[in-house]
Length: 365
Ligand SMILES: *[C@@H]1O[C@H](CO)[C@@H](O)[C@H](O)[C@H]1NC(C)=O
Ligand SMILES: *[C@@H]1O[C@H](CO)[C@@H](O)[C@H](O)[C@H]1NC(C)=O
Image (cartoon, rainbow, N blue to C red; front, top):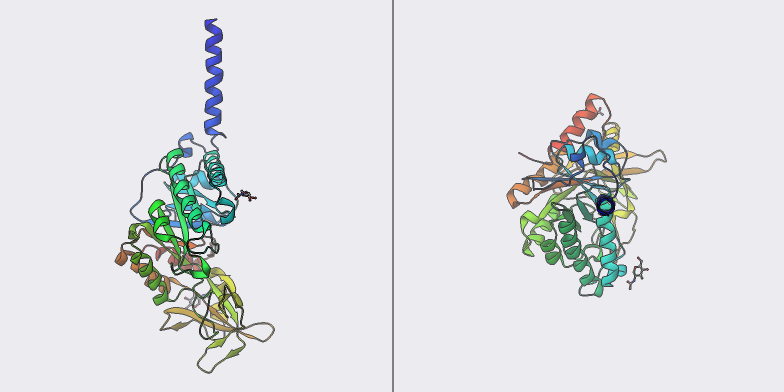
């Protein structure tokens, strides 16, 4: 009888431990599967979109990797060995989580997935239209609150962040309760790019993240009484390639009218291109690198194979460093970029230098 009881107890405990851990740890050392705890002085959040470039990230700097591509256990083990968090991507149609039961079910699924993959939280990236004071408006706030509460409880030390547009001013009709969202999660990640998604003035090619406009966005978030330590500045590692209908003598590129969310003209007339591609193109372009002293951003013109002239607007170490210096001035929590895989990590000295320079300015001295 005593032996049977003992056996039963053994069975039960092994069943429980299997359930709580889900899968077995894929890392060399079991301790690398433990969640990362504590907060670094300066956050650097990287979006990883897949592939193996993560091996070449500047790991002295990275504090969080948001997995927007396929989950790679090797990345998790490596990040943990560097003390960096690895977090899930969270996205769901907001109309589906108006029902509180659906909301809880979604969160439970995400927490279980994070646990099974030994991850340290979630980055919620809901880039959907939401009307102010609509049922979705309240549902989204509740989703972030409940996600944070559940993740923090179920995975001690875990991090919940939320991606927001460059300004809280209903950009792309995203009218969220930014104050409440920022209050309930660990931080908001401000996507200071695609700032010309709604062009109301002249339909012309402009910078992806002009300096003044970018800073106005942060001032607006701070005016909502959001703690600066709850704000991470996001910068672009990509640019926009616009076909010009006409290039004026002053170099202004008129672009096709492509409307977006009520605005007559938008950056959707252009094509997003990685910094790595830009660096291969700029020196052989018609103009080489030019600098716009008003938007504080680089650009160049090139002639495409079909003979049309294109204007490319982008960010480089200079334009990014001007923006990231404000992280210190405003007392923000850190920086991040979309995305970590847009640089040239190949093994040649020019690429290496350019790539290092882009990483370096994420944490200005
Ligand atoms: C719950 O979510 C499912 C999809 O996940 C959706 O089809 C359904 O409409 C949602 N129900 C409510 C009441 O929101
Ligand atoms: C392009 O020109 C700049 C400035 O002269 C130089 O530093 C850089 O190495 C060049 N890039 C390539 C890919 O040759």
